[in-house]
Image (cartoon, rainbow over all chains, first blue to last red; front, side, top):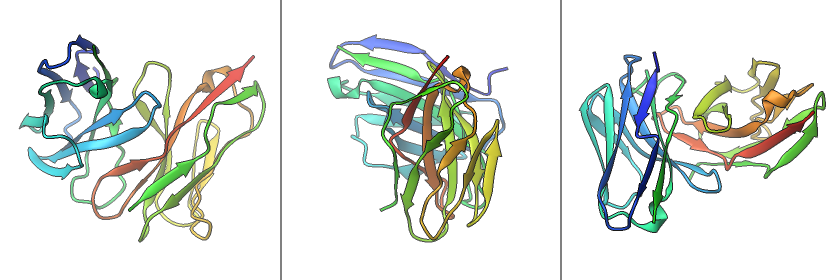
Length: 116
Length: 112
């Protein structure tokens, strides 16, 4: 069984469209994350949710809206897509949400978004 | 703010060569330090970690020692294989909060 799964794996769409990426984890973790990896492989956190509550919200355009229907799922909805949104988006999860310890973050396989 | 700096790649080596990837960090307090590896077309996997000064993390022949005096966490492997070709990311995590701050990644290519 895949620990952290994302769908779709590839997403090609036109500027101005609205799209969603889904993430599910079956590890029983409390905390989930979205990261963006640009074309130069630079990775930056976007959001973090702990038990469906937003705990990290980096400087991300408000066109990006995370939604956590339950603690096993964290979806990313993007409105009015722009060329600069083209990137690989990684979902991750970890056990620790309280800030103590150094629990490993488990990453999904990534979703490659291409905006044309 | 917190930051992680690692050497730019690509690093190209022959099989069985010695690999070092430098990583230094800037952070207040006592962060935990990590190395993640990303194989082609895959997500990131934790390679090793260290949670306090002088700790040594090791896995799959890779090692890194948490050096607080030099704020460094250099990754080393004594004899690389073609299968070690990947992008390696150094990262830190502060004691308060669960946010990982990554370096820019170093691509390593090992040739037979």
